[in-house]
Figure 1 (cartoon, one colour):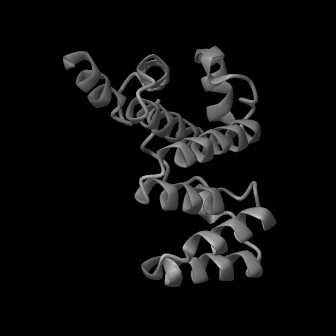
Figure 2: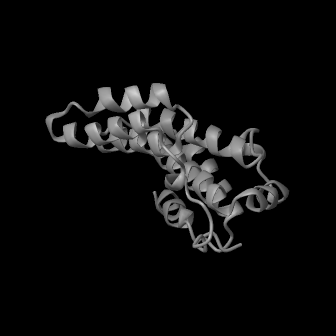
Amino acid sequence: MDLLKVSEVDLYFDESIPDEVSGLLEQASAAYAEGNAESYLMRAFLLAPKNLAVVVALYRFYYYQHRIEDALVTAQHALTISGERIGLSGNWKQLDKSHIGYAAFNSIGLLRFYLMALKGAGYLNLRLGNLDEGREMLLKVREADPLDQLSASALLDVIDQH
């Protein structure tokens, strides 16, 4: 399955955002340098907790602030939202080829997002010292992406070398 071929599909950032939420994201961007972005992001999240653009903005904020535990919680939220939208509402550990095919039929763009969120969560678990959980997540991504277009193997190689 070509997970990089997403030119004719909707992506998470194509989703409409209410004006108030969009304004809050803009304010967060402007306030980032002063260290005041989080309050705007949290207000946006409270207004649109299932909007993936909002969730990604919050994730990036936490990640770049080195708040890895908060970033992991946000990545898991992204997994839940995107998984529900493409019929993967169960545990990621139970993901198999039939689930991947069904999800791809629903939205290849959201499936790619889901797998990237899983890869991100795997990486964050590694950073937190949860090596088994992180490795398992990355193996699941590689299983779902046998062409390794999402580069989960690179992270797995680092784990294996250490």
